[in-house]
Image 1 (tube, rainbow, N blue to C red):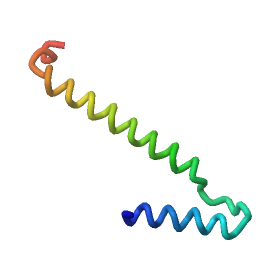
Image 2 (tube, rainbow, N blue to C red; image 1 turned 120 degrees about the vertical axis):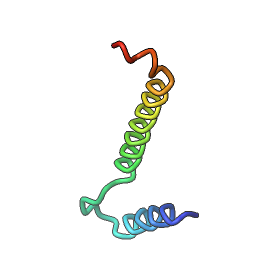
Image 3 (cartoon, rainbow, N blue to C red; image 1 turned 90 degrees about the vertical axis):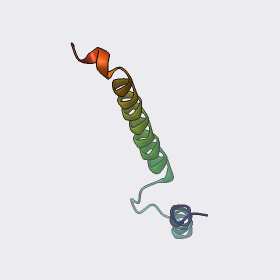
Length: 61
């Protein structure tokens, strides 16, 4: 398992061991942030590919 995976697993285990919510970031929040950042990178990459591919056609716009 990668270092990030081990860290995340440790955080989950710590949260379960405490048995109470102390305001720490929940796993759902982490999943939402990862999906949002991944989606933003995908959109930015797609825009970069389209602009680089059609750069010659876009010069007059």
